Image (tube, rainbow, N blue to C red):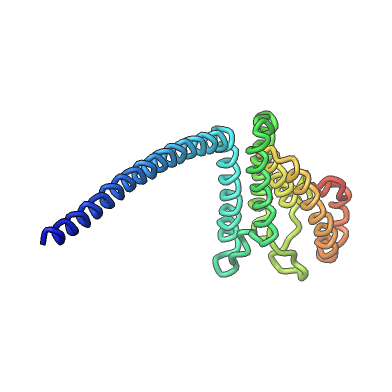
Length: 251
């Protein structure tokens, strides 16, 4: 009996020693894990602070002002185009196309935004040339004024699509802004679009927008004027000789 009790006591002592050793090991492991957790938490906090600092530097006064100007310019341009189309042509003759938003246009604006974000991250000083940015803003305002004057002056004669048939309300407009520029609508958009990129201090997009928009209008104007000469004959030919197109190097 004593032998049995001694055997049981030895087993209990062995189990207790294992338990105590395991508890000690677990406490050590918990302490180690706690240290890892605290270090990870500290690194995470530092990372958040650094990211917040970088974010605040990236989107500081310069970026916020320039991007806000860009978004306001785009929204005002397209909304005002749609409203004026409603005023002069009526709701039944106006569609989503009157907003003048195409896939190519969206792609171009998206690329210009990507350029801006890349440059302000790697070359933030490039965006600090405020005299250039303000000059671009002035171009945006001037382009808007010229284009909107063209729409208001022409009224129903101003359309977003080239007319290939002479309609009754389609008259030759040579007064107002049309006394100085044959195509003030195109001229205004050309100045506006290039101005948006100068306003952002985007050198690559400025060149790209200038080339692409110029190429578009250099092909569109001769095509449109082919029909205008058919509609108005010698009157339009005289008008062409006296008044420039409004697009550089396009007669």
